[in-house]
Amino acid sequence: MKECEICQGSEFKDIVAQERMYDTGDIFNYIECESCQALFLIDIPADLGKYYPSNYYSFGPFNRSNALLALLKKLRYKAFCRGLSFHSPVYYDWLSPLSLNPKSKIADIGCGNGQLLAEMAYSGFKQLNGYDPFVKAAFSSKNFSIYKKDFFEIDQKFDLVMFHHSFEHLPSPVEVFKKLVTILNPEGQVLIRVPVTDAQVWKEEHTYWFQLDAPRHLFIPNTKSMEILGERFGLELFNTTFDSMDSQFWGTALYKKGKPLVGTDIHQEFSRQELTEFRNKALQYNKLKIGDQACFYYKKKAQ
Image 1 (cartoon, helix red, strand yellow):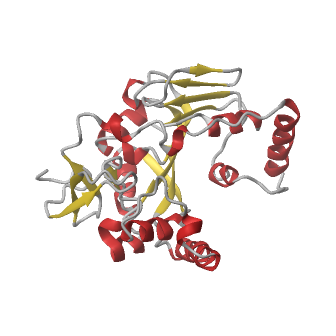
Image 2: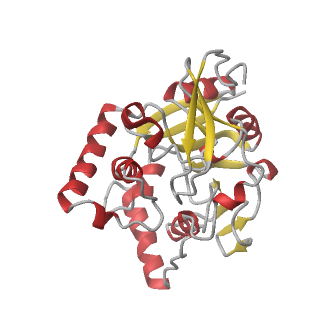
């Protein structure tokens, strides 16, 4: 890459990374744009599928709610929308800055086993669609469907398109945004939750950073990168919230110990006090906007 596809910067740093989640030992090369601080994987593997085995976390067991529990979840979301909160699940916070109604047509890109879609269906949303090229098979129920499809194969339009830690798994962020605006309805909204290089842990620990996650993460932006992408494609960035978790600390610490994420019990590696300190530190980093992931909210500008 001679020129950054996002900001057209021409100065880069070379970064050599290692696959650590499964500890395969495979080596990969990244570059970091010195202008917008975005990271790009160079020479993407021809077969990325082998880095998404059946025990990859997003393909975990699907938890179905019975009729009574589903009703309670629907009532809980209605209460939340009226300003009442009863041990609200975290995805309520993700959705709260958005303008949605039960009939909003929603796409979840990289949906994995579809658990989030199911929970949203229980909450009353009726037009939910998930896309993931690595799921075993397509699936359909009353209020949501899962398609074994790549993002670039989508041919429908939506009121909301969500990327919950899937945006960084797609090649070429510019091509993603170019496609994204074509599948948004007028005034459609976008939610992108993604790792960011604003992270203090990235600056301090570099290639041991838990969310570098070579080679699954093909691209990792900075908040500056996301602002540029939105402006370039007519999407108004109306809210940014840091929502990083304690995994940025214990995951990075595991990798520094030479231990993989998969198959390692963190409760055997860290004391209860250490894990509590990690959680508190994550909250502090989010307030300071130096956590390792953020939520970006966009709205399609009127033509």
